[in-house]
Image 1 (tube, rainbow, N blue to C red):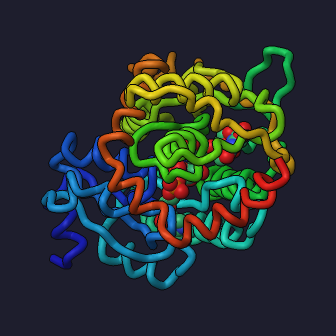
Image 2 (cartoon, helix red, strand yellow):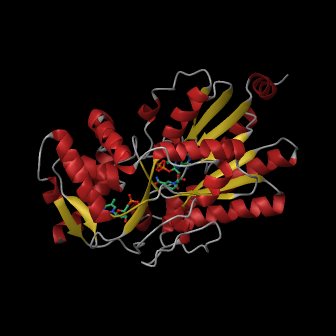
Image 3 (tube, rainbow, N blue to C red):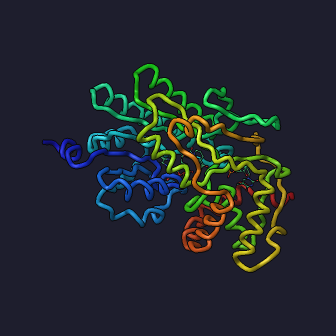
Length: 363
Ligand code: NAD
Ligand code: TYD
């Protein structure tokens, strides 16, 4: 028996989770690893600035968890990993994920989001063509569908692709590759599109942890444009529950939209966060930190999702109320300021200066 066969014998499923040291990936592993002790989970992550291994302290010693530090952009490294582990499932989350960074430096986005996904698909195809079943779950975003107006419409599984930013364009490119592998090679793949996630362990370049971090540091809260853009928010634990259901019961070749139904204008959300954090800290006046700055280039106005398919087919629905989830999230960052501080190192401040300094100075 070779080592792959031994692993197959020992574990009910062997699952690759790419990007498992990032925000959603770490929350997903913290959800799945203790829940399925008979599955082996292999976290494949090259640890970019957005990764934080300390997010995984709860499971790093678990017998059914392994970590492989490698880039999905490196085909040979990835091929060795696929030779070592007989993967039954790939949960693909690794990506460059921040719109603002994609505006200033799109090249890493093409490399990871398109070429990296291509490498994974090729290895999954080889396994599929040799008759060893493999399920490929591609975690995408609502942003590939572009921007909605004020007409009350929603994105659905059949909405046309109209990405606006280099981030969403590279995610769209990777989605198209996945679609082509389903159609051409019959790969057992599923694409999920979720709206904006929030919750513990999110890098503080994204809106919600950035606002909390800036309140804690009494730093201006930068609001792009007039703050009237609308985002739809999903608590990360509800996203992880949805991915768990897709992994086990999703239909081959399907697309699922995962939306929390919490649609809110950026300014309203920021003001709500200021009030909630102030209340928790017993302070007041954080709203005075709000500073309107030059709008983001190509800024999408509104996202909203029709997630009726995953609700009716898989019985998924969010388990948390928005305010309750915001409350848990704020509490987590207040109790994990060491985690936050470990993110806002030199690299973060360099990015912060590039992205905000001029805009804040001009505001
Ligand atoms: P994140 O930026 O927090 O984490 C990404 C992880 O991928 C990091 O750990 C990073 O080190 C890793 N990574 C990046 N490039 C890599 C490479 N070349 N090889 C191996 N690992 C690499 O992102 P996130 O917010 O957790 O998002 C995860 C996935 O979910 C992404 O595909 C994103 O497009 C999608 N998504 C995110 C949201 C959201 O609101 N955060 C919403 C919808 C979809
Ligand atoms: P973000 O968290 O970057 O997610 P996405 O761009 O993927 O939706 O931003 C959420 C919204 O908040 C988006 O409309 C841009 C806005 N925003 C600000 O107004 N200021 C900021 O500093 C950031 C990071 C975002």
